[in-house]
Amino acid sequence: MSLSRRSFLLSSAAPALAQKKAPPARPNIVLILADDLAAWMLGCYGNKEIRTPNIDLLARSGTRFLNNFVCTPICSASRATLFTGRTPRQHGIHDFLTEKPIEKPPQGQAGPPPSFRDEVMLSDVLSANGYQCGYAGKWHMGDDQKPQHGIKHWYTMLGGSSPYQNPRMSLNGEIVQEQGYLADLITRNATGFLEQQSGANPFFLVASYFNPHVPYDGHPQKYYDMYAKTTFETVGWEPPAPNALREKEYLKDIVGNLRRCAATVTALDDQVAALISALDRKGLRDNTLVVFTGDNGFLLGRHGLWSKGHASDPINMYEEVVQTPMIWNWPGKIPVEAVRPELVSFYDVMPALCDVAGVATPAGRNLCGRSYAPLAMNRPLPPKQPWRNLVFGHFRNTEMARDKRFKLVIRDGGEGPGELYDLVADPREKVNRYNAPEFVTVRNRLSAELEVWRKKYA
Image 1 (cartoon, rainbow, N blue to C red):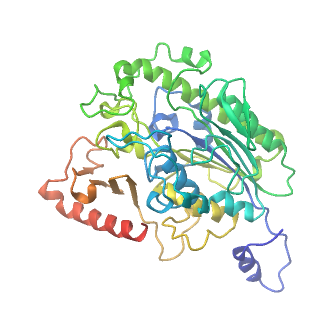
Image 2: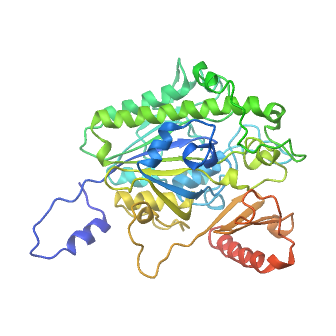
C-alpha cells in the first residue's frame, strides 16, 4: 500500500527509537446523498411532523453540522461542487441538466461543458490512492450511462421511465430495465458493493437517492398511510406567493402534497437503516465514516413557494433551499450527540474527505474550501487559523454571502433587486434590510467579501 506524502511526513517525524507501528488503516467512506432534502425537513433539525427516526439516530450517534450550506440551490450544479470542490463558475455546470432548457426565465442547462470531463472529482483522488469506488443512484452530471471518474462499480438512473417504479438504470455501462421500487434497488446495489469488499483496500461508496424529489407517486403505500391524517401545522407554509414559479402547481393542495412528500422522506429514512445494517453485518462499521447530506434544500410551502432556487422568479436563496443536513458518523472517531455551529459549505467536502482519507487535494484546481474534519472530530484547529464563519453561493445571476448573523443576496452584480436579512432577529427572512440606512455598513462589508470571492474563484 503506497503512503501519501502527508502520511510519510507524519511517520518520518516519529522518534527514531520509538517502536515501529503499522500505519492505521485508512477509513472506508460511505456518502449517502438525498435529492431535494432540506435540513429543516428532518427530526434531528427540529421538524416535528416528518418521521425520520433512523437519520435522527445517525445524528445522535455522531456529529451534526447545524449550518451546512450548498453553493447552488439546484441539483446538478450542487452535486458538481460537492464532488469537485469547485464553484459553478469553475466547473461549468450552472443549473440542472436537461435536454430542453426553458428560456424565460432561464431554467436548466443542455449539458455540462466539454471541460467538465477534465474535472478532478473526489472519486478520482481516492481511486488513485487505492480506494475501491462505487456509485449507486442518481448521477445527473452528464454521461449518466458511462462509468467515469475512477468509479468501477456503476449503477445510475437513466431517463425515459417512471422514476420510482421499474426504472431504467445503467449497470456498469449496460442499460437494464429494473423491476421494483427505485430506493430499494439503489440500496440493494449499494449493499452488493459492500458485500464484495474484502478489506484489502478501503472503499468509497456513494448511495445517491432520488427521494424526496417530485413527483411523489410510486412509493410503497405504507408510507402514504403514515401521513393520511397529518395536518402539518408546524411547517409554516403560506399561501402561494405572486412570484411562485417552478412546481407552483403543488401549492394548490399544500397539505396533501406535504403528506406525499413526507412519505418519500420516511421511505428514504428506512434505506439509511438498511445501509447501516449492511455495514454491521459485514463487520465494516468500526472503520467506516458515514456522511449523510442532501444536494439542495426545498421550501414545501414556506414563503408561499414549493421548490428550490427556481421556485420563484427571481431566483431565491432562502435558508430552506441553501441549508441541507450534514451528519458525520464514525464509531470511536466522531463524537456522539455533538452539534457543530460553524458555517460549512459543499465546497468544503472535498478537502474534508481527502483529509480523513489521508490524501492530498488535487493540485492546481484553485479550490475555495477547507477541511472541516477537525471540527467533526472535535480536534483543535491549527494555531492562528480559526474557522471563517462566512459562506458564499451563486446560481446564475444571483449571488449570496452569509455570515453568522447576516445574509446578503444580490442579482446581476448589484443591478437587480437585492436582499439583506438579519437572521438573528428575523430567522424566517421576512424583513428585507437591503435599503435600510442602519444596515449599509453590513451590506457594503458583505458585498466586498463577495466580490473578492467571485474574482478569486471564477
